[in-house]
Length: 251
Image (cartoon, rainbow, N blue to C red):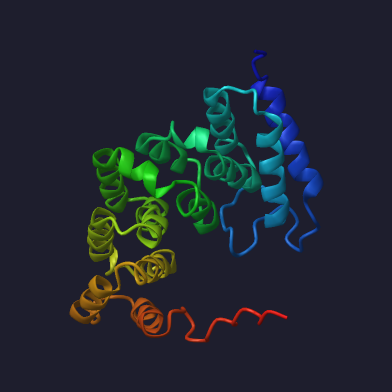
């Protein structure tokens, strides 16, 4: 089996990202959402997903370790889109999922800044099964992140638990989520308050009773936006309170 030339593969992906970019009023400065200070090509999410899937599909002969090494290179890349692409590769590949460790997340977060980059890694790249497979290590890692002086890592501690608590009934995810919320609920930067709200809302479907009890006991100390949005989610099933559009009737 021919080994991947990781440097040339990385260069080719970076070139695809530049080519897929569209003009943005800030030039190559990040928009207000990404906010990372990294070069920014303004590539659409559908194009990012297309590039990630196409690259994985064309590299079926690559080893698991080579796939992981490619993601690792992209996280260390200069541009915002390289980092988001790396997270998509992780989330799309069952092969890579088997190799992921909590230590990798902590290392990759050193290269990420701003909520879009942090969320791209932490909200969708790790399956609940991945965390459950080595829960003591993941729990310890999330606890460290929640206490880190870097606000991006504290946000990561919250966001890492949004998908597991939404997709799994495992009480270990729920209990750690409430522990992390309790630790960070007094912070008022939007990077944290919005993540607190997101995590509580993510828990609402599978862990609604625990969330309702926690909200009742802690409403006075939680960010107001988290209280408002979570109560709405518990009551209506949506963040905004607006009903979801019903599916069209069969013809």
